[in-house]
Length: 191
Image 1 (cartoon, rainbow, N blue to C red):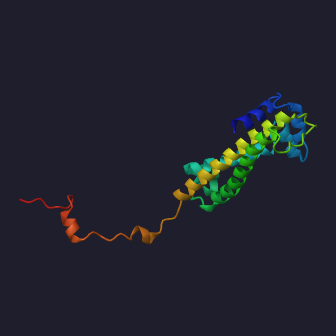
Image 2 (cartoon, rainbow, N blue to C red):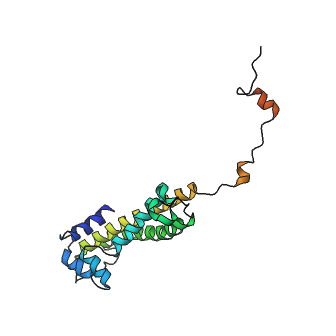
Image 3 (tube, rainbow, N blue to C red):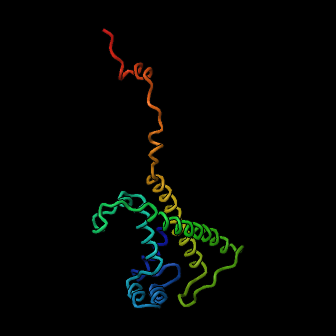
């Protein structure tokens, strides 16, 4: 995640990274709606927003406020979070991000070696082949890392919030009188 965030930070601060200038990067992200243009002016694109949402979901799966709505949710404050509310988006995005990340991490070195065809370069950005392949590798590590983290956190959240069957908790047979009499806690001392 750090190399991907590092490149985005460099572009946001006006620097050049991976053969792409900050101005060209901002121009490529400024198309579309007024909201997209405003975000591009401060260095934010769709992948940054998606990563932020993924990180929010990931922390919700790991911390207690993911099980009970926190105070800042006002109306829902203190109520239990429905179990599937965070799990469904986590499972859906985690699988896609994991696969996409693994494919990019495999593709980048194979394309660099000439085993797979090289990607089409974005000449408007001034991208180079090596910069594009590094960007693919960094993106693969970022997306794959987030995907596998979401899978792990969703599995943990699922286990922690699994409903407990009432009959399973009471299925133990009560101890017999003989077992109670022989246990040290209930044994009557002899006079």
